[in-house]
Amino acid sequence: MDGFFAPLFASGRIIDVILVLVALEALVLLGMRARWGRGPAPGALLSNLASGAALMLALRAALTGTAWPGVAAWLAAALAAHLTEMVIRFRRAGAAASPGCDKLAWNNRKWRTFGARPPMT
Image (cartoon, rainbow, N blue to C red; front, top):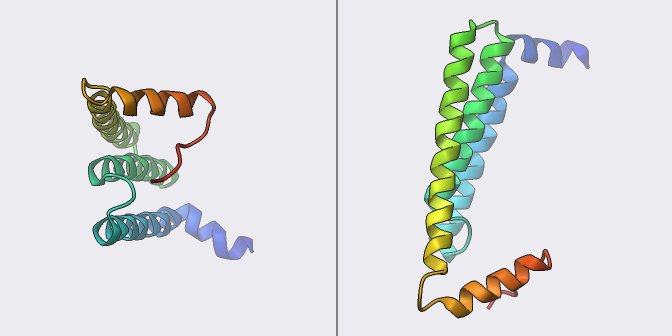
């Protein structure tokens, strides 16, 4: 088994395989959203996956012996994507709590308190 995985890790190709799987995940989730209108919002989804991809690329850079500025650049990209996702999510949460949506905000708070998801309607 070492003969198979060791070269994948040494060359960083294992990260390429993972990134292909992440891209497939994005396509499937975006396709589900387009077809059925359910699933994560595209902006939040893509920024979340971009953050993870940038972390994977930082790992790849470290595995292949890239100098620290290269690794740091990927980590900074991951941070930027993560902050973008947080902005998107907090804006959406703020919109749900705006006047006129008080009942929805209260219901979401109630369900979060018990660590459960509200029932689908």
